[in-house]
Length: 207
Image 1 (cartoon, one colour):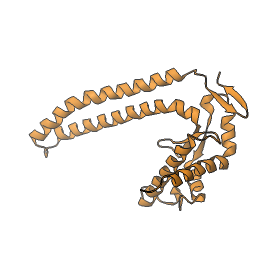
Image 2 (cartoon, helix red, strand yellow; image 1 turned 90 degrees about the vertical axis):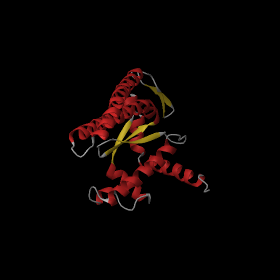
Image 3 (cartoon, rainbow, N blue to C red; image 1 turned 30 degrees about the vertical axis):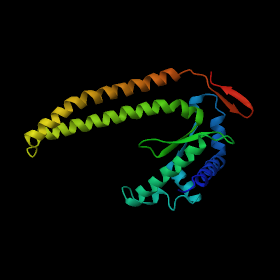
Image 4 (cartoon, rainbow, N blue to C red; image 1 turned 45 degrees about the horizontal axis):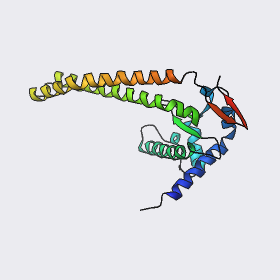
């Protein structure tokens, strides 16, 4: 079994390099009093080029056409590198801890200081749970519609599909509703919460 420690040390150095190479943006985010504002955005193209400079990518994704194997491969390597950086950066002690988050259907990444990430993470998890449940509910309805409208489907299969759907649809609807309420309650609970952040030997607190 290979020793994971060298890769872990490499991830720590990678997280540290990202911080130092974007120090001005980190200092600007850290200097903001409001927790909700302690983040900055970075275009995916800029992040890709930084990874190229770190010898983690050969080419940025945008040099390849959309929906190509080459582009998908770059995106996969990008996400793996981001996960490595985050694993080390969230536990950093010699520079501000942070997390690089992706934004669905966006060409931007959002870099959050770890206190903001820690506050938002539970709500994001609940939101993902809601979105997944809603997605599978739509798929079940599509299967039912297909089964009931296609002459190629036997009565036996059609009956089984409708029987399964009669159980799954209420459950998925309930999970979707539960995820939506979990997300709303977590966000509501966090509103107005005071969290201190160490900034240049001082402590700033959200009012």
